[in-house]
Image 1 (spheres, rainbow, N blue to C red):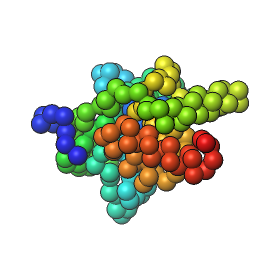
Image 2: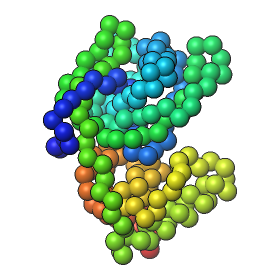
Image 3: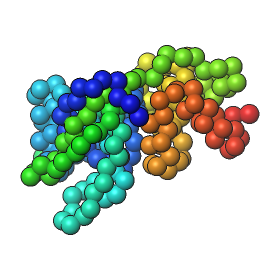
Length: 207
């Protein structure tokens, strides 16, 4: 995958057993010292951090564990931070731009940092005629979730955007982290939405 710019920058990384998509909502319960420090720094300096999926290893640091990170991740910006009790932060973030990690390393305190470059955002394209049903299906799914009081999708809703619709379905679908990662990495939003559409039709969600 080719980066949109040859320039690289250093970005703190938060490895998770999940995939963050652009415009997606990420809720975190933070209690490890390295990540408490990271969130504190991001709050003070109004800086983002990077979310990368774990290919191998655990979210909580364990001595001797081998850790391998995906190279494509998504930058996260803080929405709000709450401290329900001492030593614990409840954090909500929004996914922004995807990035490619060219090198990563772990600091003495255990925090991962990477040399990254931003990847192009999705081209603004409408869902094609055969994919409109998938966009309508997402609107129905969000409405149903709202009635249950469990919707976790950030506004504004952009059902006219093929990439946005594909990303929101990727968050909702019961598919593996590996599959979500591969979908997130796809540079063409219509290809991503087409794959989602095929999955939904195979399950009878869209007809």
